[in-house]
Length: 164
Image (cartoon, rainbow, N blue to C red):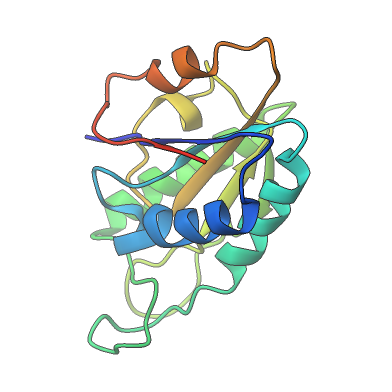
């Protein structure tokens, strides 16, 4: 499994970081063991990261996988779609969790989930700690005194990471 952290520092090129997460977080509908699905953003750039990721998720082109213009396909099964949707619903029910993009289940053939961004969640929240394996990216703020490397490593799914 995977739960790849992305650390976005205060001096990062936020647009480049957002573009990378748009590609690496939602690739294969997030069903990838190295999906960049756990973003930690410095408080000074956090609002811009959240806004950028929300916009990025909303602009992904959904469609059939044999269409070269498709950027997001369905998840593998009804069971997996419902499992991933459950993660999002539970995160949204937290007193601090916010779904800033997506979260829905589009109608039509296939097991579709909207590309979703969940903000204001942190360590201890299952959406951050557990493998979701769907088109969902969580965003957590951090400050100068926080052990962000420790936070990034606080997972049993250590396959990939990126620092911006």
